[in-house]
Length: 343
Image (cartoon, rainbow, N blue to C red; front, side):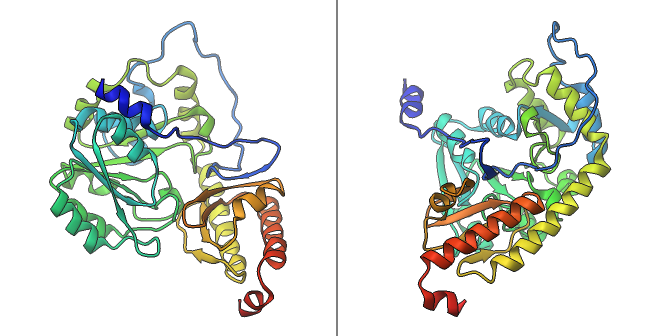
């Protein structure tokens, strides 16, 4: 009864979609990578453990397949972690703002979510460690690079956090392909470390909904006990296998995205808005204006957050130019002349 009450009172996660607009709100890849679909036996259940995919993921990450678990997007792995390890009233910690599903799943499993405030959207690692030692959370989530701010936490600081945490530390590397600093090569050193990855961002198959977790085989086996049977369908398994064969093309797409991100940052920094350095496939900005509403009226969709902050997905060159030209027009019209001159 208690869990039903919690779910009843929770806020629904809403994903805004409108295919008639320029979509710069969901951090999807704008590159369409094509491949020939072969016949998949849809009359049979999928491989429950996705063994072929696990083997290929393990090879890509230089691990053993026993250190991999796959899911219906990395969101399912987040839920699996909490389903496996979190007891009612135990604490889960992250920082704010970050990926909302950490809080959502914590509340779903009757945990207590603690979101540590940041300073100008940047994490104070020393303060974060102090709060960990004080609150003693069962699970700590760190999105790195962080969604939606784009902040990248250095490996040295991540290791400090892991060493000062008695619970599990989950590092969500959904956007790591757009930067450097993966903790995969540290997995063997820390028993309490779990790393999340996804095929929805850099790999460009968000529609297939494939993500995975990496950890030592003991933790993977514990999570497998909580996994729903046949959780990843046959088509998604096959598509993920195929996309792993096109690593060079994917990395070329990533390179283009990084180049476009840096170009956008240079141009946006000349406008009367605040631009935060990003290490993902998006840019985080703040403004005194309701930019998400104003851009929506111009058929451009971005993601709005609290405190008049906004996340803009880096798209292709043409759409990025339309966005920046439109934003410049809005700012020239809406921002007082003095502020435009000061910028």
